[in-house]
Length: 47
Length: 447
Image 1: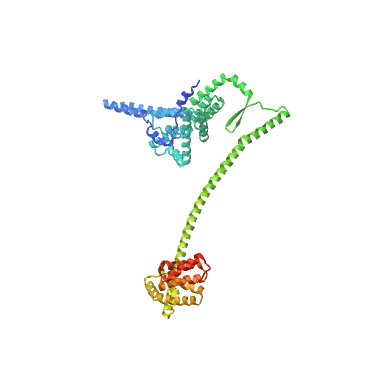
Image 2 (image 1 turned 30 degrees about the horizontal axis):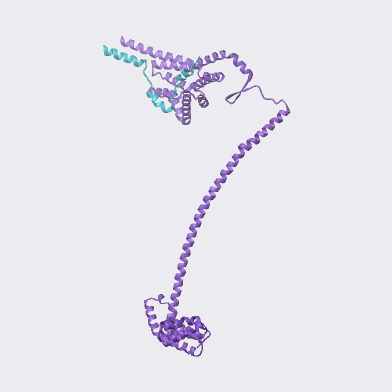
């Protein structure tokens, strides 16, 4: 049985056009290649 | 060796990213948009510079009605690769049509408002708002889902199913949609018998976007008598409504109109009264000005007359006609003369008076001796007015005599009394007293 109040919490407000800029700047763009580079950098530093 | 391992790991990462992209593409082709979005997000976790994956994620968001999220992905994509990037075309397309972008933004705001209504427990308002949102942007998957949730909460399973069907047309395998569909199935199973029973008593049909449900039973008249009775009751109700609701309203309206008119009339009257008062005061001012003008004109006329008389007196005096000069001088008002003319007046008056009085006395006495008392009286009167003691009271004495002989005893008594008062112990006084006594005792007796 679905609980209306609990389901409602899963719905988040949509981003408005005015918020687009903030959304772009706050996007976490870290990927695996960044992590790999970081690891290699650390390894080279340790050697 | 280490460098070779690094290169292999890097290649492996890129391959994994591409693999997730391929998976997403497969899902997108069968309209599993939420599944595709999940795969694309994973792809970008491996390689943020996977332009195809990022562009496709933007496209998926756009298709699901998440326009701002789509714009975000395309802007980032364009930032990573500015040349030969289809994201640029997408952005240009949206930026060209500002009205469309504004409309999308309004839709998003309305959706957020609907969500707020839900949180404030205003479900009816939320449903209305969501219907507006979906009429403007039918691709908004979460709008359909929220509408379905609201219908589920209301127990309107049919409408909930319809909303979910619309959501499924855009995003086929959305987990939320599937969960709600499952809920509907369970509820339908649980209330299956009851709903069938309900359906037997209800008729439902669609009017535009609304489903109208009404009872199948209808009211039927059984006899002509009851029809007439109903009509009569209707007429009576109509009359009563007219009497108790409509007529008082009309009367009230008429009264208020009349009051308004009276107030307006009062205002108008008071303003008119004020105008009348101001006009009256103006009239008074003008009248007073006119009187002043008249007075000054009269004064000017009398001044002119005084000057004319003085001139006439002067000419007569020069010609030796003392009587005419004296008559003219008597008509001159010295107050109207200025200093120069007043000096002339005084000079002539002084010279004329003695000659004039002498001439006048001579004429009056002559008339008296000839028995012309009526003609003598005015001359004696003039002399007495000018000089009461003229000829030691002779003028006044003969004036009294003239009056007595002219049978005017009242005036005679006045002047005899003056003789007695002014010249006591003289022969004239005793004679005057004698006549006074005679007139007091016997008015018939004469000298």
